[in-house]
Length: 140
Image 1 (tube, rainbow, N blue to C red):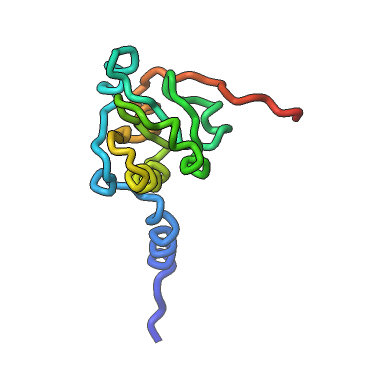
Image 2: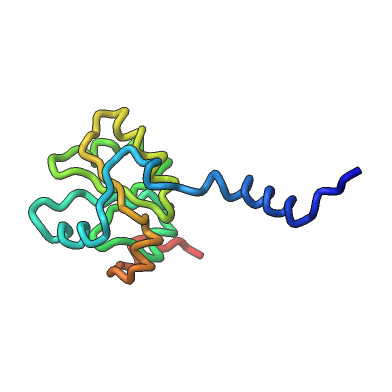
């Protein structure tokens, strides 16, 4: 009986574990904005609402300047905050929550949606400015 090499098993296991978290540019429904585009728009008259879809603790560690934290599980309950003429830029750490948020937004007639190319990981790797804080402290 042939024995399957351990290396092959490890690679297969890693692919099964990691594959659901891989996000490719063609996975998005919305057009992307590069970090440079976002920086140009942040202080302009046509600045979109910037929405960070991560958990509050992640948002508190670092976020795009001026971003609003609406964690993905709260998105459907806070849709009215996203209705506006200038659009909405959504992002998360690696794009997976962004991809999950798009059908929610489009399904609720929010059409002027953009995603951050490279997600927040790309923003940090590119050494773009970020803010810290914004989360209320708890008793512990």
